[in-house]
Length: 331
View 1: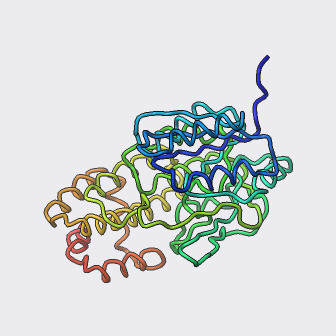
View 2: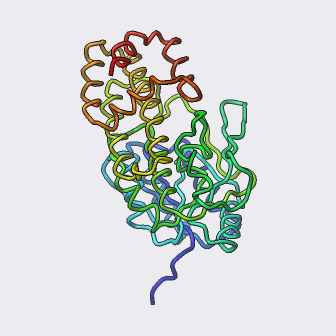
View 3: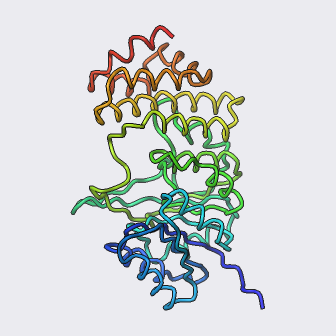
C-alpha cells in the first residue's frame, strides 16, 4: 500500500551538528500540525551527528535519514529535495529552530490562496540580544508583479524579503530546478539567488504575520568576511543569475546590475581581508569583467551615486578601495 504523501517536507542538512541538533529536531517534532516528514541529511559528519540522526529515525517514522560524504550545504539540500515527497518544502539549518505553530500557519496560508511561496519574519539571536528581521511588506497575499521590482535589490538598496531560504516554504515543483542549479562553489549569496530565481517564476507569495524561524549568530558560521576565492565564487553566482533571470526585462536587468556592483565590491573586500595582493585581485576582477553583462553593469554604475550606489561609495571610502575604483571608472 502506497504511503500518503505529506503536505510538508522539512529538510535539515547536518554537518558536525551534535551540539545543537536536538533543539532543531525537537522544534520540528513539536509542531502542532502533524502532516510532515523530516529529512535529516548527514553531510559526512565526524562527530555524534550520524548516530543522533539514526536514533531520531527509530523514534519517529516521519523522520528519514540520509548519510553522504561531505559535499557541502548545497549538495545536502539537493539530496533532501531528491528524496522528499511533500508538496511544499522548508529548509531548516541544523542550528536553527521553529516555533511550534509554524506548519499550522503555513497550512492555513496554503488553503486560502495556494501560493507557491509563503514567508514569515525571522528572529535573530546573538548572545542575549534578540531582534526581529521583518519582511518589507505587511501580511497578505501578493502577486509577484507587485513585488518584482525589489525582489533582488531595489533602487534604494532595499529588498522586500531577507535573502535566505530560511523562514520560507516553497512549492517543491517551483523551487527544485533552481536549487539544484546552484553552484556548489558558491558559499555566500546562494540562498538569495535561489529564492529570487524561484520567486520570479511564481505567481503568488503569501506573507504571514509574526515570526516563525529562529537562528543564532555563531562565531563559526559558514558566512564570513574574508575569502581568498571570493571573486571566483562571485563569478559563479553572477552566472547563475544570468541563467535564471530574464534579463531582457528592464525591471529585472536593473536589479541584476545593482546586484553585480554590490557583489563585486563585497568580493573584493573579502579578498583584501584574506590578504590577497592587489595584483591577484586585479587579475581576478579582469576575468569576471570579460562577461559583457557584468562589464556593462559596472560601467553604468558610475553614472550616479544615489540609493544603493551611495552605499557602495561609502564602502569604498571606508575600506580605502579608491585604488580599485579609479581604473573601473574608465570602463
